[in-house]
Image (tube, rainbow, N blue to C red; front, side):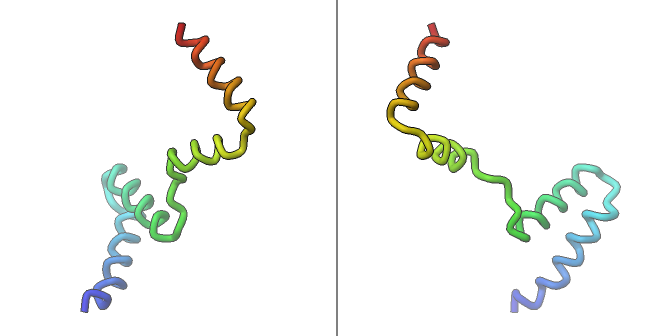
Length: 72
């Protein structure tokens, strides 16, 4: 079964994160490990939604007017 491959794959990922010669390979392995551990970076869209949800209509209108003012 495919699940039988998981321990070996994780071991290989750990080896790469600790000993790969290429920094980019080590970085990629570390990111993969963190992602699988549930420490994936927050999605930018979700951050923006949270930013908007936490504000009143008046605050959003003021922010929009400020942004439009900068555009001109």
